[in-house]
Amino acid sequence: VYNRYGEKVTPSYDEKEKIYTLDFEYDEKLEEKYSALAIEATENYAARMQNAVSMSTVKKYFESGTELYDAIKNNPSGFVWDYESYHFENEKAEKFYAYDDKTFSCSVEMIQVMCKKGWQDYRENINITLYFRADEDGDYLVYDHIMIGCGLHNNRALVHLAANGTGVT
Image (cartoon, rainbow, N blue to C red; front, side, top):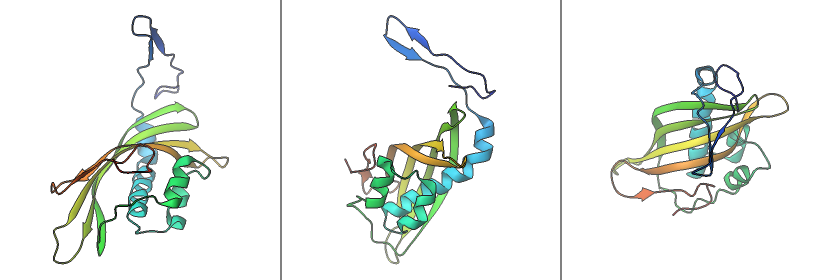
């Protein structure tokens, strides 16, 4: 694991707690370079889960052959709102951490708004951690994620997706 200066950081072991800990710092250079990619990947993932886009639109952001890619491809979402249009608000990518020179993670938050004439807009909070890995061409693709939570602003329901994206709990 490397800090934002490219220096190797070694975890420390807490003998009492029997756990390794590591204080690694937010990487501003990664944020500048990959925020747009992280937001686009999240928007396309969310749109795919609502059956709004095809896999061909989404696949350029995700590493094929991973469990996440297969889940997105098979789109297990059994709960899709009826809508006529959608857009995203308050998009932000932050907390970029480099694990080595080929992998990093970041947190992405946004609100997905689905609209249907005559109905109250469905506003879903999205809070997700994405894990990126460089492919053989040096392009970064999402290989895993943790869905922290999804839910509505208008209190109609609260939906939490399982961490692997394969179900609703």
